[in-house]
Image 1: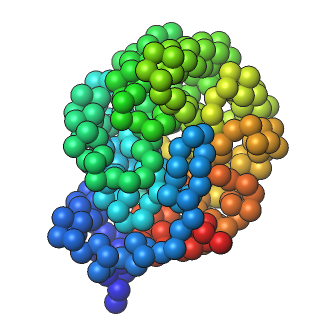
Image 2 (image 1 turned 135 degrees about the vertical axis):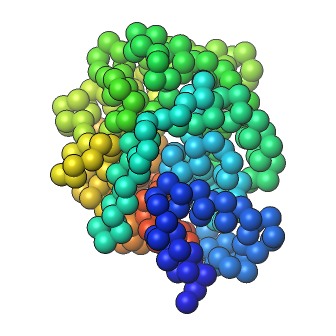
Length: 336
C-alpha cells in the first residue's frame, strides 16, 4: 500500500474536522523531517509556469480557501507541489464558527457538507503566521477575506477594507468571499446596492494602495453556485465594469437533499461549477481570470475545466478524498 493510500485510509476513519487537522499536521511533520520528496511523487512532477494578473504562478493547480484557514500550512502545501494556496477565510476578529459537528463527510458519494462559519484565529495571529511561513513558500499566496458575523451588511465594506490594508504587504492577491452559505446574510452582499457599494470601496482601496505603495493587488470575487444565470450575469458584468481582476467559480451550494445545515462540496458540485464556468467565460472573454473550483475529483474533471478555459484550478474536496494522487494527476494534465 502506498503512503498516500495509507494516509487516506487513516483519515477516512477519523471524524471529518479532526481528520483535516490530522492530515495537515502530519504533512507539516513530514515536511520538517525533509521526507516530502521521499513519500510524495507530486514534488517531482513536470510543471509549466503561467503569468496571470502580473503574478508568476509556478503551475495552474492551487488549494482553495478553507483548507488552511489560519495560514499554518500553506508553505507545506507549496512544497508538496501546489503552485498557489489561498488561506482563510480570515476575519478581522477571531471567530469560533458554528457549533460542532459542522463537517459531514460521505466517502462513497465523495461529498462533504460543511457549516463551519468562518472559524479562524483572526487577522492579527493570521498575519504573524504568514510572516513566519512565507519565506519557505515559493508559490502565489492568496488571502481570502470575509466580514465578521457581528458586522451588519451596511458596514461590511469596512471589514473588507481593513483586511486589505492589514494583509496588503503579504498577500499576492485577495479573494473577496461573499458567497459562503454559513455566515448569516453574507450572500446578500452579492445583491445590487450592497454589491455596488462593496466593489466600489474595494476597487478604490486597491487604487489607493497602487498609488501610495506602488504595489498592485489583484482582486477576485468568490461566487456562489446558487446564483441564477440572471443574477450571475449582473454580478460579473458589474465587476468587469469596475475592473475586478477575476472570479472564483464556485463556493459550496445549499442545493442538496441532505438533512444537514451547510454547503455541499465534492462530486455533486461538478455540473454546477462547469455550468458557471462556461457561462461566465462567455461573458468575460479574456477580460478576467477565472479560477475553477468545485467538483474536481478526477484528472478528467481537471482536463475538462482547462479545456473550458479555466485559467487556474483550485482543489479541496478532491484533495481530501484522493490526496497526493489527484495533485500529481492535476500537475501532469495542466502541464500538457
